[in-house]
Image (spheres, rainbow, N blue to C red):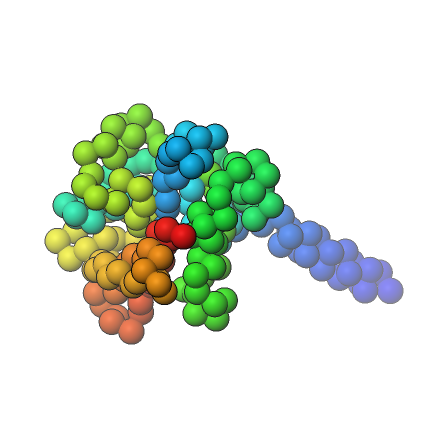
Length: 202
């Protein structure tokens, strides 16, 4: 009887520990900068991450400057996970931008992942750098974990090195497009990661 009680107690402790475990490390994702204009004057400039999993406040990510093939640090997670309700009520951003952040341009089964959305704060160095990045690269792109590094073969994330290419898919009725960042493992071409960064206009 005592043995059974001890086993049950150990099982309970292990289950409780599992519930409190840290989420798996998120290595990549997309980001978007939402900038105000005459139509949406209440928004000044807010950056958002679109990630494949949960992260904590303070997690740091580097921006990949696709034009020059460089990593620029850092974007810092500054909120809890943001659902559609928070994006509407707290940030008061238009529905088309919410559709971008949640990647609702694609059906659920066709998304690379269902984005977990967080607010980001750029470091001052990164904020200045964004001003010099051409076209829409200053308003969105690929994120990788802050300790990622570059080699002559691509981006090194943990034990894997990925070559990166970008394609753009037009949305229906020319309502913008989706930049798709394709990360291909240099050692195992069958290992592929896709990251969508949508830019809707309607």
